[in-house]
Structure formats: structure tokens, C-alpha cells
Amino acid sequence: MRLIILTFTLLFSIIGFSQKTKSVAFYNVENLFDTIDGVNDDAEYLPSSKSQWISSRYESKLSNIRQVLNDMGMPVIAGFCEVENGNVVRDIIKNQKTFKNYGLVHYDSKDARGIDVAMIYDSSKLKMLESGFIRFILPGDTTATSRDIVWAKYKVKKEILYVLVNHWPSRRSGAEVSELKRVKAAESANQFIDSVLNTNKTAKIILMGDLNDSPTNKAPLIIARTLSPMIINESGKFGGTYNYKGQWEIIDHIFVSKGLNNSGKLKVIPNSGKIHSFPYLMEEYKGVIVPFRTYAGSKYLGGYSDHLPVSIEITMP
Image 1: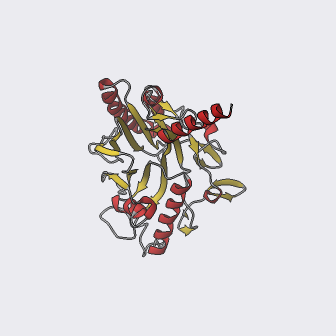
Image 2: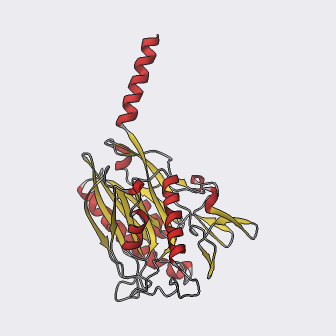
Image 3: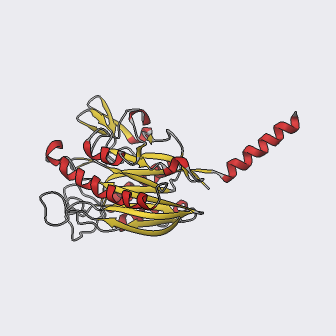
């Protein structure tokens, strides 16, 4: 009997070592600007501005982001939005022992404020084969004015993984009026996804981002035709990633293709979608628990972001 127990223990140990579990995350870091006056509209985030965005505050923001990534288990891939440029993302990982193997995927977009999306990845576990961006023109415009969708193609041992990072147009002009813009972003992402799946119907694809829409809205449902949503109300304590006027809603998403469920050793763990609400990410405002922001208007709070980070778990060969 003891021999049988030892045999099973050894077997499970072998399985455990051969199948590593890692997280894949997305985080809207809310206005991660450097302190340098650039060509974009960054006047709000400069040392001379009303917000007094000085180096010590910038370094504190970087440290906060590192803390979140560390407490999410050092994601093998982390997507970001609301970053001013590639340099601010490099500053997250630069000269940090825990990030020594991480690479960066970033492209400058045509967003008027100059904010972009980007991703970092653990190059000791993933080999980046290709990367690029999807640029689209919004209804009513003649040139691109929104954030690009950034994508990367990775090799994980013998398997291929595609990752797309998104930050779709906001609802600033009203949810209904602006919906066509997010539909355009969704259709652009979906064209890329379809092109991959047409070549390989079991392709492994992860789409993540701040979509500025809830799961039941028209634009996210376009993605849900081909990919499965991983972030739902039950994924977090508060049932959302963003609090607007006291109401929680999911606008930060992660979707995965069927290929991450069906074949190979690179797989998503079912029901692993999570909205992280570490105590330090939260504060009470007018009797409601909300994300702890860096600023409230021009008042410096020293917090993290107005969004909560999201993640999924995958097994890696």
C-alpha cells in the first residue's frame, strides 16, 4: 500500500513539474505618463502642470504597478493601456531583478493624447516570433485617431500563441452615440482573429483590453462570436472592473479561443478569470468602495488606477 501511495505521489510530482501554471493579465494603469514634455498632448502630466506630475510621483506609480504584477504572480504576459509611450513601460521593468527576462511589444498610435497599448512578456518562457498593430479609421473620420490594437505571435515550446491588446474608444460622447466606434474596433480585431482561425481552426488566441463596453454590449458580442469571455461578474468580489457613479461594470476583458481549451499542453484553466481587488487597490469614497486612483481631478492621491486588473491562468508545456 505504501508503495502505491509513493508511486502516485511521484506521478503527480512529475505532472506538476511538466505542466506549469502561469497567469496572463491585463491592466489599465490610468494615465501612465512620463514627466517629459512630448509632442503629444501631455500638458496635464508635467512637473509644471496643475497636477504637479513630478519624478517622485512617477516613480511611485511605477512601483505601484510592479506591486500589482508581483501580487498577480508575475504574469507571463501582461497587457497595458493608457501608457504614454514605450519608454514608460520599459521603466516598469528596467533595472528590476524580477523582470530581467521580460521583453516589450509597443507601437506608437495616432491617439490625440498619445496614449497607447503595450504588452510585456517573459522571454525565458516565450519566444516572440512576430508583432504588429491593427490601425483603423473610426466612422466619420478620414484618418486614424484612436488607439491601435497591438498583437504578438509567440512560440511556447512547439505551440503558437497569439495575443491582442486593445483599448477601444471611450463613451465620452455617450454610450449610444459612440457605440459605432467600438463596433469598428471590434470588427477590426475580429478580422485579424478570423484570418488566423481560417488558417488554423484550433489556433490559440487571447484578446484582452479595456473595451469600454460591458459583456452584453454589441461590440464585445462581436468578439464573443469566435472567442469565449473569461471575465464575468463572478470573477471578482465587486462584480466589475470599473466603478461609474457608484455602479460596478465589467469593461476590462479577456477572451480566449477554443484552441486554448481543446488541444496541446498550452491551455487555459477553466473558470480562472479573475478581477483582482487587493486591499491596497481599493478606497472608500462617499460610502462606496471604489478603485484607489492616482489622482482625483488635479488632487494627488498616490493610488494605483481607476480600473482593477484582470487575469486568467494557463498551463504551459
